[in-house]
Length: 530
Image (tube, rainbow, N blue to C red; front, top):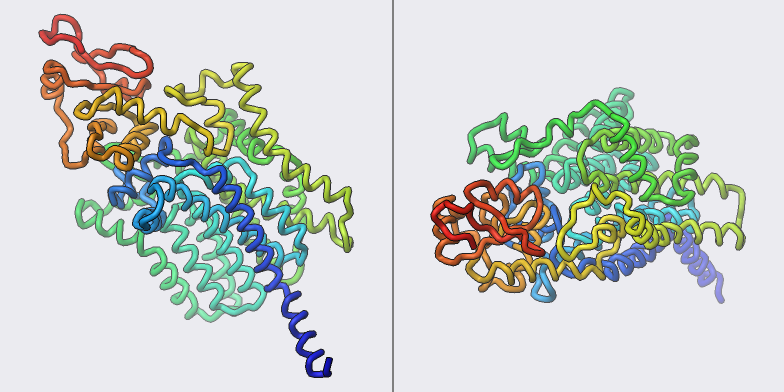
C-alpha cells in the first residue's frame, strides 16, 4: 500500500475509534436491543387506567384532559395522533409502540452518554441494560404512557449538557433548554430538571463564562419548544376566562370533575408509610447490586470539566428523588421512571470506577454483570406467584374481572395478558348495543378505546363518572331518563368498585351478578327492577 493509502487507512481507523463514533454505534445497538425487548413484551391493544384514557383521548383528538391541563401531555398526544394516522396496524397497538420507541431511545441515549464519559462499552451496556430492565421503566415502555418519552428527553438533555461542559460552546446550552421545553410539553416532571439548568446558566453568566445575551437565547428556545403546552394553556384561559384557575390547572390539574392534585404536589411531609412505599418501589425496580454500585457512583467525584456535569446531575438526583418520595399518590411506581434513569447513570459511573485500571474485565466479572442484569427478570417472574399464594397485599389490590392483580401489578411485560381483551368484550356484550356501561377511571378508557377500534357501530354508551365517552355526541342521561330507560328494558351495567358505587345511589340499586353489576331499582319505587 502506498504511503498516501496508509495515511487514509490510519485516519479511517482513528475515526472509527473516536469516542463519538463509538458512542453512536454502542447507543444504536443497545437501543435496538431494548426496542426488540419492548416490542416482544408490548401490550397488544387497549390498556387500563391512565393508559386507557390516553388512548381514548388520542383516538378522538381530545387534546385537553378533562381532569386538568397538567394531565394533558400535549407532545405525547400529538405524536400519538401522528402514529394513529398511519394506515397500517391496530391504532391501540401503535400507541403502545410509541412508549416502546421512547423507552428504547432513552436506553440507547444513556449508553451513548456513558460511552462518551467513560470510553468503556461494557460500562455503557451494563448501565443501559439496568435501565431497560428496571421495573417501572420496562412497564411504562410497553403501555401507552408519557413517562418513557419524558425520560428519553431527559437523557438527551444530559447529552447536550455534556457537550456544553466539554466544549464550553453556549449553543449546546441553548439545545439543553430546547430539549427541556419539549420535556415539559410532554410531562411537568421536566420542570424539576429545568431548575438545575437555570441555576447553571445564571452561574455561568455571573462568572462571565457565558455572555448575558445567551439568557435570552435559552429562554426563546425553551419557549418555542414548549409551545404545544403553552398554546393549550392559552386556549383554556381564553375559553374559561379565569387566569388563576387556568394556571392552577396547568401546574396541578383540576377541572369541573376534580379539584386537582396541588396537595400532593406541594406536600412537604413524609410519613413512615410513604417512605416505606418509596423504598419498596425502588427495591423492586432494582432487585440486584445495581443500587449499591449506583450509590458508590453518587459519592465519587468527577474531575476537570466533568465536575460541572456531575453537580447538575447530582442536584437533579436530589430534587427528583425528594419530589417522588413525598409525592402521596397510590400509583407512585409510575413516577419512578426518571429515578430509574438517574440510578442507571450513577450505576454506570460507579462501575467505571470499579473497573478503572483494568484493560479487560475477565470472565468472572462478566458473569457477575450478566447475573446482575438477569436477576430482576427472575424476581419479576417469581414474586407474583409467591405473593399470590401467600396472599400478600391482597387487601390493597383492586380486583377487576378477568385480571390477575398480582401479574398486572408486579410483572412489567404485557404481551400475554388476556384480560386486556376479555374485559371490554365481556362488558360490551353484557351491556348490548344500546345499553349503558358505568365505569371509573381505571376501566372507562379501556372499554371506550376498545369499542372505538373494534366495534364502533355497535358500541354501547359508556359513562365515565357522569360524562359520556362513547359515542361523544350522545348526552348522558339524567336520573329520570335513566329510570325510564331501565323501565322500558334498557340495560345499565356497572363495573364493580367504589368509582361506580357512588353513581348507583338510591333509588337505584345494583344486583351483584358476576362479573358486573346490573343496575335496577329499589322495591316500591313504582318501576320494576332490571
